[in-house]
Image (cartoon, rainbow, N blue to C red; front, side):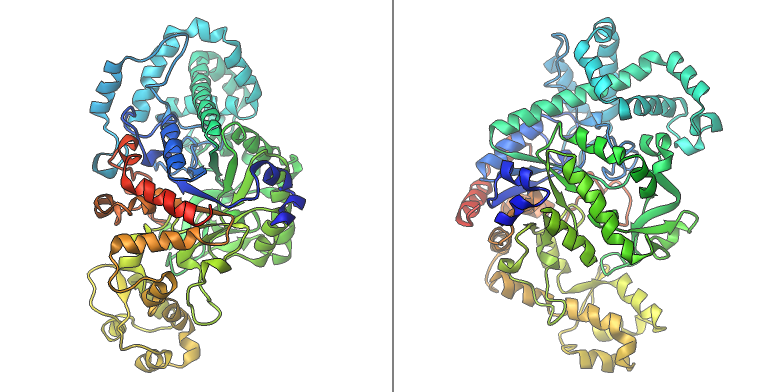
Length: 600
């Protein structure tokens, strides 16, 4: 690992230190304190840092804090820069000596309870914006002479001016997408924008002031967390929403003819169509990569580490024609660039620019089907990848689980991600099964009626997953039941290899005995990844909380997001218990003991 000092990330590794660390991953919307209103706020990260400290963990990882749109997806934000004011702390708000009274905060908490039914409440956003607008009007003259505020505005001119006008224009147009505005606004007629800037001067300034409040509160959190020896890890999405200030104001950096996504795989039968346009890297490069540099410059204010989302998208992206019917999801796309010989140059160049233009240690989400060009580049630049236990298998041989002492050292090991089911649910209900829709789709591609074989191959189930019958205990029996040549059944055979007897292989890998109970299952799983050789082991707090049987019963079957789906069950999970309760739970001490015993 000493070789890391000689990589492009060497300076960051010298600052952080090459030592094994444990960490906790949790979206800010998933936690709250006794002082929160509707959803977790910036200052709740201080309490979360205290919880990390008490549990022996020295990394606190969160999801993006960018201003989200109607779907509340932090990876589909209306700006790659602007922070979501939903997270502003009213309890800790202060301007020119003004603070909100306890009565106001309590009334908000009554109307917008946080964690009710294990959900956060995004409706508090407009309430916060409304009451902050009253403060803005009250102190308008002071704000207009606030040198710190205007220093912030000047330092962030690259994105803040366009974002603020974008927000005002969105309100004028009733929230509709910019591409549905009249042509003069959609295509940024200079005269019309000047006219709007003059007519709505106060409204535009208010949008900037709100971002100033977010900036100050989050900077304050970083300073506090630093005093505890905790590293705060942020998240940088690769893409921006089609209906975003970025795409509206910097059209040349995006190719609107295509929608980004992911090809079909066994976890998402029809692939994924995210809706965001693909990046036009040629134009980003021609502009000296300023767009990327400015993103990192802003994130540097708040974080010590940054996770790059979908890093393989920097090498090649799955592009779906914008006019492709929505019901086809991600099936009819292609990789862009189509020339595989260009992938290494493009990805290496972009990541090199990123490493040299941030003070943060970069990590990269490299999950899924990853070309060797990506893996090689991360290693060369000293960037951590990810090792997720449920997907670490000997795919080239018997599909058994890889021991964690064989994981990559330059990696972050963990049990789950924000896009997966929680580990305990996966172990109980998904390991050893496949999606029914996946089976039917694979049968359809080889002109087989899957329904005819369901009862022959699988046990009776009541959900959308299929569990192999124990009698189908060899590939030969599988082939015999279908009565088709092996070469025609290759996809189904690979799925069979991956999932048949998966739970038994998992038990063997983790040392789980038949007499063990659920709390032992999760404890052995956590220990497994904590003992990995990976320099960092960061686990989803939801998985760690399942050590507490009372909490586990309530949350183990929930999840943060299910890729390929939309709706109010995504990006809304929140613990019902406030952090003040969680931090005193016995499982926090259990985590500390495990972390210590695993040398982290």
